[in-house]
Each structure stands twice: as C-alpha cells, then as structure tokens.
Image (cartoon, helix red, strand yellow):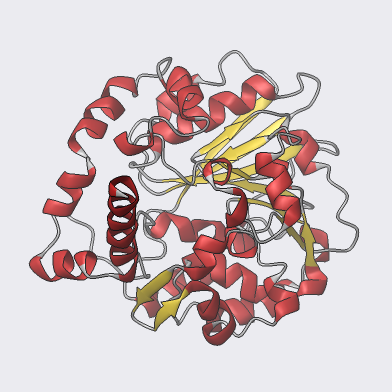
Length: 364
C-alpha cells in the first residue's frame, strides 16, 4: 500500500517532533559522521563509505549515522564495516520526513535530511555531515578535529563565490528568474560580506556546543515555509550569520567541476590557484559533475569513482542506468512545454552562440 504523503505543515510537525538520539555510547575523541541517502543515491553512498573507512585512522573510533530515506539494501552497506571494528553504523528512518518540500534538478527531498541534525543530534558535542556522493581521500577525523573556536558551523565556499560562469548563469524557479548572483543578493538579501561566506552544504562541521538550538529551530520553522533555489543550502546559509561561520580550506570540499574551468572563469585568485595551480591536494572530492552520467566520464575523479564502484554489488546496476540516462533520453522525457523552455533558455542560447562563433572562426 502506497504511503500517503504529508503536506508541508504536517511535515514540520513531524520534524519538530523528532526525539534526540542517545549520545551515551560516544566517548571523548570519537568521531561522529552523518550522511543522508535514499535508494537513488545508495550506490554512491557505498563509494563514499568505502573510501572513508579506507582512509580512516585505525586508532580512532567512528560513529556513522545514515539518515535513511529508503535505502534498499541496508545489509550491503553494513557489510562494508565487517572488517572494521572501530566503525559503528546506525540507520535513522527519515522516509516520512520533508514530504511536500521543493525538489528540482537532481535534488530530492533527501537533501533536506541534514536539517534534522538540529533535532536528532542536539545533545552531541560535534557532528560532521557529508553528502552521499563524496570521495574521501583523507582521514575524516582530521575534519572532525578542526579548530572552530566559538564558531557554530564550518564549511567551504560554494562556487557562487569563485566561479564567474555560475554567477552569470540565468536561473529560474517559482520565486525568481534572473542571474544567479542577483538571486543571492536580491532574493536571499545577502550582504557582500555574507555572500563572501556563502558555503556549500556538501561538507559541514556542526559545533553543537555553541549552537542556540531554541533560536535556530525558531528560525528554521520560518525558513522552511518558503522554497529556495538551492534548497537546504540556502536555508543553512540564512540560519547562520558571517560571525558564526568558520570557512574551511578548499581541500575539504573539492568540486570536480572546478579543475575544468578556464583561468578567466575564476573570480578569486585563491580559487584559481586551488584548481589550476596544482598546489592543492584534495581531501574530499564532491561530485558536482556526476560520475554516473555518460557525459561526465572524462571529468576529474570520475575514473576513481568507477574503480571503487566496481568492487560493489551496485556496479552493473549503475552501468545499466548510465546507458539509459543519456542527455538525449532525458530531453525526450520532458513535456513539450519543458522542451521549449529548455531550448529557448538563456543557457541554451549562449551555447548556440558559442557553437556559431566557433564555426565562423573555422571558416575565417
């Protein structure tokens, strides 16, 4: 029998009714990591977890919590840790949470699960959050131990702060249409100082001891009544002001899209050096360019993803899905209205102009 979805008000009541998890098994020095996944991201979660355990310090203890939005084979995920006694894993059922919330592009309601950290983990001292499509190249304990002082949340700048093509990109959803950079200033009302600290929600450290949970929950209830283009990421950025944020180095959230940009595409010299100067060794790779899409097979850190996935029970499944999910097939699935909108979008028109200019250059 199909589960009846809640409306947004019902979902908020369910969220605010979540009981905090027990922290009694957590000892001083133990590392607490939270990830979220649904059935779609289950194979990619496997890669993230496998690279995490292989990079971990055998002398540390790690407690992993999976915010579970419908994982099909929990036993397959648990099998990863059979040889690792210093890892404990717990699944937290989230299937009924965040029904009715804004979903778009490849972002499902599972992206909102990290907001439940304010309810489930409020009694913990510190929590690391990771997206399920990450590739871990360093011990996650190093991130857990980062010196935050009295800052409440730590993250890495999102691309709006360094990537000119993204700032100039035209975005459109129910509440805004226009350049991305203007969305952040005109719609989210971020000051230049705050925009400079706009962080990605893919890798986060919550300094729980410093957070005013009553105040944050009150703000969260208000923010969750509205839709945002960047979903949970916008909400988190509106929850914390610039004085509460600790910016982490790019190595902790290395976008695999950055290294294919041109030199003139970077707004910040620091980011240009991070990606093009070959001076930075990534510790966590975030798959902005999804390795399971055929058009991204030649992109950075995609080969590493497939090499690791090949060791999993999901390998054939993801391969078959990739063959079915081409750009053309995704386009053909769109409605007539969506096809017209896509073909006449500013992004598409820019691509047409670029192709035309290249043809003219060849002829001349």
